[in-house]
Image 1 (cartoon, chains in turn purple, green):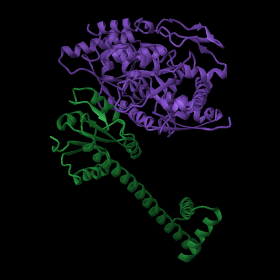
Image 2: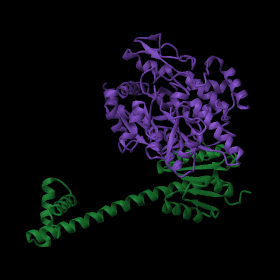
Image 3: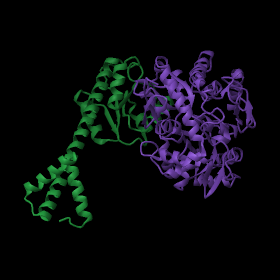
Image 4: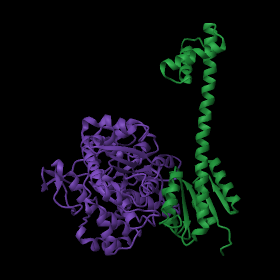
Length: 411
Length: 198
């Protein structure tokens, strides 16, 4: 512990920056010998650029972002690795009050069920098309985001073509609720607290949640500039250990109020403390006073929530292919697979003697209930990790998965 | 072809900085400059003017939206890449330091675009310096005003001359190792609380 590591991390004002915020504010970073500076940013583009020029060594990143960087899909990119995930889940789909009223007329209920909500939305979409009205417009935060892919997955599985039947635009998270109120958009898929913001301000209803579309699904990762990670393995390992400890602290219900207060601070999300609590407690106010308890709404620690699964990287890659962001070939698939680095994660956490998954990839959607799994060291429980439509993603059958989704796209 | 003047779009919600950039571009012979302060309707603007170069400040939260627009060929005819040459690391760094980002139509010759970027970087830095100096000047002015008021309070309540009042403030500040303006501010606040404000 003689050598101190100086690390600057960029983050966006989102609830799942919690693991980084608590790592710094609760002293976990300092305890591992890391002097961690956190810098809030205004766009994912800024995070990417500042990582590329070396202002940041690591950053809070959308799970597909490092893959998109390495595939050359971004205007400026430096090689980026994802040695750790920053939790699972945490997003929701919010619709305007007007759209929600139209959806309830077609059977949507305030229970966040993606199947009934999706069927109702499909009926509204068809109704508008018959009346010759313009398509509904939904916003997501970035084209290479879990939000974009889970929204599209949900819509497509409900028979709505995300490219033809509705319009998807890009908006920064803090502007979503205002855009909904102004009628510029009809709905959005974003991380917390920006769905709660829409509900609390009376602008919208939460229709469904990421945790219902795909349970235990990837959302943010710690992205590290690859060159820096290669040259400073000890600094990175110390940081990963501190984030692991932070995740454990974030998951403890007794710390919920303190964490909410930290996140609400002016240097981070800078919004009311009450806005942070639904995501942390899983008791989601969906609108009109209704509260729905969501299992695993946001999982900071349990179920290997910080493990960078190669199967997550590969699923995200299949969605880039599905929606025409990149062509599928073995070289691209390899780049996606190699972006996530469970080897770095394992090496960093080994000294802690904690539960680690036995494999680097899993069949996504296979676990219908929480299941104890074989792991190195202490015991570990995974799942449930099901897709709402019963879909399965076997990372060893990637060509078949891509082909099946391509057939479905032209329905 | 090479002599055709480049279409340049400047997106900046800060009107003063935008006009400084615009002036710089015009001084260097660029006539085809469009300045936009509001991102709303930007797709239409881009389709209309078909810019060769887009300059945007880094605090703008809509960079992700803008970049997405470049990837959708419907809005912009040609692919747009950041900076002229990805390997030109020094100028990328200088730009990010200055708080400016630029997008350039693919295939544009480096020698035509580099001066534009360099100018934008210089003007962004100059603006930041100006804003900092203005802020300092503002707080200096504020300091002077509060010291004047504190002197007035001391002169009335203790029957001191202006010089004696200032001397007392300075001595108190030195004893407490604080700035005169801070001592003056405490005095003004206390006087207001006690209803002694003249």
